[in-house]
Image 1 (tube, one colour):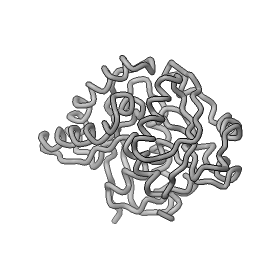
Image 2 (cartoon, one colour):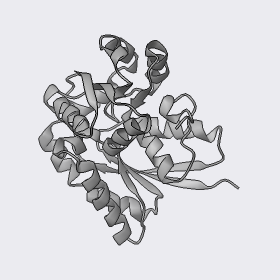
Image 3 (cartoon, helix red, strand yellow):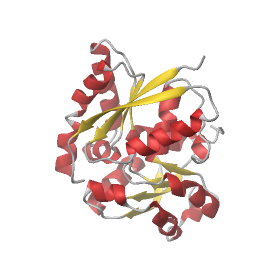
Image 4 (tube, one colour):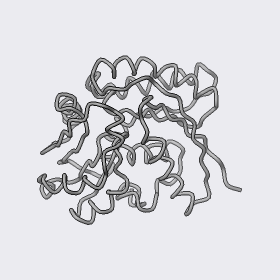
Length: 250
């Protein structure tokens, strides 16, 4: 008999992609493995991707962890990479520990992971050292993201900031544009490509194309988060059609 796992999603209020791409990947996994998943969200207010709104939004994450633990979810994913990385170097560890304590205090101990931490861990899992990064944020926020990743020990040899300030517009960005953007970058010198350093920017439909075009492993914030959730649940991290990280090789 297959087990059903409850997936808790801590979501920016204007995010329209986390609740499509992460469930889409886990539905693909259901076609090849017996486990089943349900999805449960709690939202933090945020409309403009600017540092002030991100900090105010992050303060709401404690409430979201409490709400989702009321539903006795099995794992929680905090999906706003830039909110974590804009607060300060290494903050994903602080956030994850604090939110996990909240679930425990609510009598519903469940691990909390962040898309920021998941991306860092995913790069380590595939053994990447040199990377290129595509991000939808304005350049100052993108530079904070790049600094955060570099501080974790990676060489970001190039990046693209798409300068999209409105989070709804980030969710409307056409993923079909991503291969062309990557083609302008020195990906030949990289070990891996971070195709979307943002869970809100759609990227899943472009992953296979960019891997075929470049011959490099492609990671996105959503793929990394899905991998981290499966590992936390002690499930095989495999999803067909979701790039190298979820191919079963790791």
